[in-house]
Image (cartoon, rainbow, N blue to C red; front, side):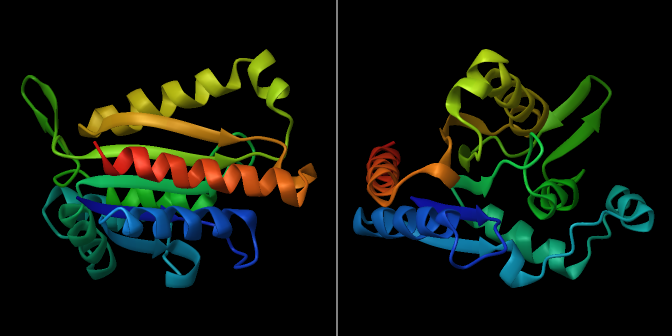
Length: 195
């Protein structure tokens, strides 16, 4: 299976980078083909401009977006890895979705409604949080984030949502606790390799 990882964190020393590295290695160890799109390293422009939006409607796609479309076409499975900041994805990952999950590629309007176009792909998200788990559980934030991602983004485009993993209170976790989290990342990659 072909796995495309959409990774977003500005620091190469971050725990998110360790998550991405552990996940990638575990997939490869399980015989999976893997490509990583490090959005900060790529200096991907996340800003969807009006002229670009109008161009999508006419089938005019900028070169950087065409390149990402090719990576997504190649993939059977997408995994998004990033921290949750201000209740959502990092700005460049959010902007990636704005520009790359474009009309004519990820979905298209029809007389009967929207037709999803990424129906042959699965998706999983791995996110880190600075806050304790109970803060998100008590306020229903996990469920809210899942609903937005699953229904408004992924399923709208036809992606099959396999699941989400949130690692909470990462900033305050010990090295030992982080090693346990990384082992869980490897276990997740192993399970997803068998789908």
